[in-house]
Structures are given as C-alpha cells and as structure tokens.
Image (cartoon, rainbow, N blue to C red; front, side):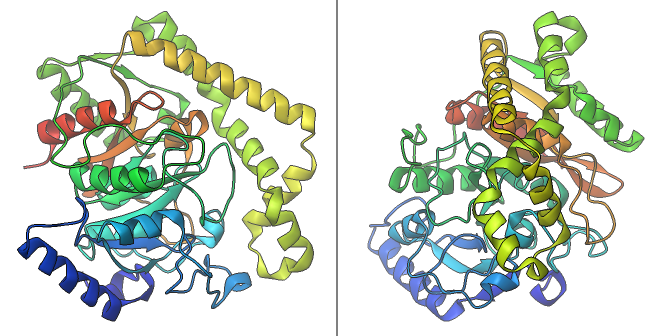
Length: 413
C-alpha cells in the first residue's frame, strides 16, 4: 500500500538513503559488511533525535526543530551501515494527540500508537524495521494492530539518550520489524553500540537467525484486561493456546497455580498505578511546557499534569515500592515458567484514528520493565491480532528464542 494512503512518514531522506544503500552494496560485494543491519532500511520514530532530519514530536512546540546531533540509537544505526529512510509519525510526544497514520490492513482503523508510523510503515513494506518507543503500550499494541513483530527490550537495555523523555521508570526504546530476526538484529546491534547508561546491554548472538527454542511451560497472564476482549478475540486467543498445548507446551492458567493467581491479583491495579507514576515523572519538562505554551498542548497532556499536581512524594514512594515488590514476585515465577503469555492488545485495531486503543494488556511489561514480544500469529474480525510473550528482566535472548519458536509454530499459512 502506498505512502499517500498510509501516511507513515513525517519526512523522508531518500537521497541520503540511496547513497548509504549503494555504500552497503559495495561492502557486501567485497565481503565486509559492517554489521547484521548493514543495508537494512529503517524508520525512525519522530521523538528520536536526528541531526539530518527534523525531530518534531508531533507538536507545534517543536515545529521544524533541528537537533544538533543524533540520538545514540541513530548513531548506532549509522555505525552499523543501516539505512534510515525517514522519520515516522508519532502521537504528540508519544502520549497525546494522534497523527494522520492509517492501518495498512484497513485504512478506516487506527494503526495504534504511539509508534504509529513505525508499525504501519513496517506492515506496508516501506522498511524492514523501525525504531519505536514504549512507555505503556506504544510498541506492543501497534505491532498487534498492524500485524508485525514488536519487541520491547528490558528496561534500560537500549540507550534513551536523544529520545524525548516521558517516564524514567517506564520509557523503553524498542523495535517494530517484519520478523523476529530483524527485530533482534536491530535491537542487539543498537545495544552493542549504545546500551543504556548503567546497563550491561543485550546479551546473545549478534548475527544469524535466533535459535528457536520451545518453551516448556507458559504462564497465562489472565488479568482483568481480558475483560476488554470481544468474543472473537477470546476465541482467537484460546485457539492459539490450544495449538501450543497440542504441540506439547504446558500453558498454565492462574487457577491452577496459587503463586500465579497471586501475581495476577496484584497486577489488577497496575494500569491505574502506571498512569500515576507516568504523570508524576512527566512533570519535567511538561509542567514547563504547560506553563509557557498551554494552548499548544493537547488535552491528554493537560489532564496528566493536573493529575501530577495531586501526587505527593510520599505517594510516589508507595508506587515505587509496589512496583519493586511486583517485580520481585514476577521474577520468582521464573523458576517454574519460561515466559508469560497473553494478548498483545484488547482485540484488533478499532475503527477511527483519534484513539489508538487500550493500553491495559501491554502495560504490565512496561510497569515491570521486563522484555516482551508481540507476534503476528492471530486474527480477529479479519484484522491482525498479536500474541504477547513477556519474559524476565535482562533475559531477552532467552525470550527471543521462545518468540522465534512460537512464530515458526503458529505463523499463519
């Protein structure tokens, strides 16, 4: 589908991209590619700084803004011979008003957000992979809606230097891609060159298709978010679990394991707690934006800043303690399960472009900082619907191997 219909890009840099692609072709002919992403066409979400293209955040506050340098991840792409084609549409500051991007599978439907253009452009075949970000659901949900692979690494694994901040406890840099392998290659290379400050970065091979490994046991994370699913969505998820079970994978429901049920019960309030933490941490710089230019900010940002004014430091400490204890309980289940399984979104993409869909089902991985994949192996109402695998903190390659196996086992004919 053509770009004028999908509107995945804010701007393109095709002349520079052609030169980079020609240079990559010469390196391959000479047998000396720079990295696994050498020559890979890549989109870059427009909250990520680029020196040779504007970085405008889908906000009039940053109209025609030209950063002085590249974000760490963009610099890593250039170092590896990757080919950035342009900047992709984001919602306002990756949290507010939607952009013009449409879902390539049905242009009457949202592509999801906030990594809207990165997901839609990948789905439409405009590039092999794209950088996106997730604070609550902004990689996993659009991957689900657009039928591509979404990979949210462990918190801190990829550098956020040069990415406009929202929440230090929630912000993740990640990838949308046409395959698990492309998602892993891009993330692994960026982490090699630019791990998050104070983080060891991703471990595991940097070349080759990830070695698929069947999970022995999966925990079904049947949270209250399942109440948002329609009947067709629930049937699609149940069918995916049934297929996994027929292939010999144990998929354990919460009622069969008291420890898993206790975790599910504890996570019930996470969607609300996550918004509280996000609002409190967004104050800088958004309180300043609101004070200086209130008319240039959308209603969601104003709502979050009003909520932030009512959150005390003591309340924020309570939120941090709740998150830390939840992370501890999640990690304990790693002795019994290889990963958690749940839908990536509350069904397929809804009609309309103003709302990018519910964040409930992808938010758990963001709140806890654990790695997650959305795999395009389900369908509902003739639209893509992703299956989510969530793993354990800093065990990203282990989860990637399981994601590759599930993708191979369940991919549509």
